[in-house]
Image (cartoon, rainbow, N blue to C red; front, side, top):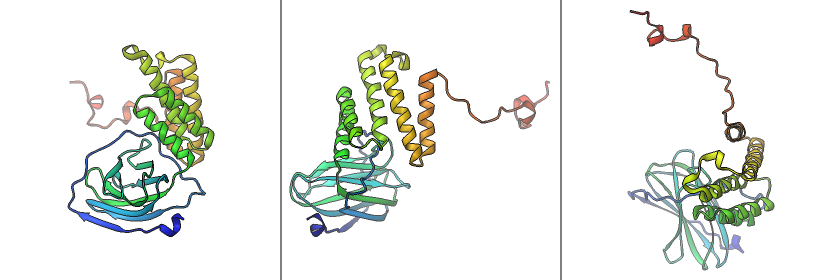
Amino acid sequence: MIQKNLRISRTQRRGLSALLLGVAGAFGIAAPMQAQSLIEEQGALAPMRDEYAFEGEAGQAVTIQLSSAEFDTVLYLVGPDGTELEMNDDYGGTLNSTIVTTLPAAGEYKAVASSFSGQGGSYDILVRPASEYELVYDRAVELMTSEEFGEAIEAYTAAIALDPSLPDAYLGRADAYWGQVYLTEGENFKGPESLTPEAREAILADYDQAADLFASQGEAEFAASIREQAQILRTGEAPETDEPAVEEDMLPESSPESQPDS
């Protein structure tokens, strides 16, 4: 069992320069409540790399997540023979990192926490069995990266069917609809006016659903930004703000408008 084989070790290598690498990602993915963690630790990262070792089995699907509010994370997975298997910089439209993969062989693997710029700070790292949703969602992300938008739409739809309560797949699917139209139109792409009525309605439906789900999860600001994009797509105009107009007599004395005519 995974629990019996779990061994965690940490090695700090100071003085290593940050590896300035990155890959494209889509939206982050939520951990299923029933998944049991292989690693769940907290740390503070100086300009270096922290390594966390865990035992894996051939064919085992794992999710590795590295997040920080203080620096741009970079995550690596190193195999039992010391080979770097995967790397991720930004995932899910954030500066956090996620790797979803199937381990090729049994042995000791290392999840390596690093930063993009060499800056240090506090972070969270998590290694656990991957859910079916995560595997399908990650496949959709890969298809987006390779601009296979039609297949990406199908993969996001499959992810939504597995767990319709997670908003990221809706946003990913909306992006895939945009990408599909962009590839079709090529140099003739003119933004929203290039959308077919069917694509427009599909994108708006996904925007609305994602905004509602993000709002229900406490992400009110992000939900509002999605709704703003939806309104622009519907009407061509941004929503009005609550900021009052600046009256002339409220301008500072140093402004040109407040100076008397010469």
